Image (cartoon, rainbow, N blue to C red; front, top):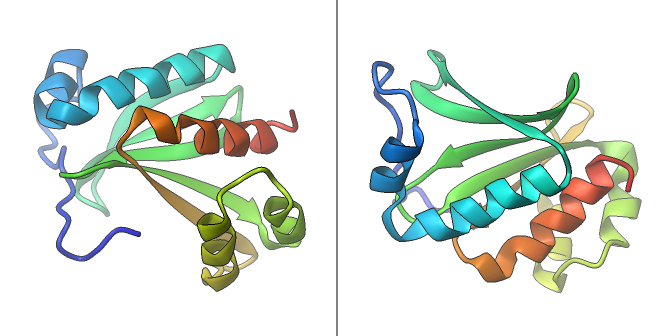
Amino acid sequence: MYEDTNRQLLRDAAIMPSEEVLRGEAGMLYPPYLQLVDLFEEYSISLHWRYYVDGSAWLGKVTKGSKTVCWLSLWDQFFKVSFYFPIRLTNRLLNLDIPKELRYRILSLKPIGKTLPIPIEYSAIQQIDVLKTLIGFKLGK
């Protein structure tokens, strides 16, 4: 789980997160990022970066058509991939092939309205299976 000591990157509104900028800012996280981009391509989903004034940072909105799949942000030690699911799907989420720790965390998360936010700290290629499972679930696959 992310801690208050981690710092969100990509905060300069004037510097759009191009591949060159991402490579430099992500550093050792760049190979896992490329794996994530490959996963997006596998599911035919798009990543669009936009600067959000309210959060003072660039966020990647991952979409398929008009459906938002997840959100992406870069932190100093990980990419945060944030999913939002209706609370009514909690039991189905808990039955997915995901690590036990994530199931426990899902049970402890506080809803936002009728939505359950599930932030995943992604920093290693080995974690891609969890993201693949959640993306597949979000897309109904």
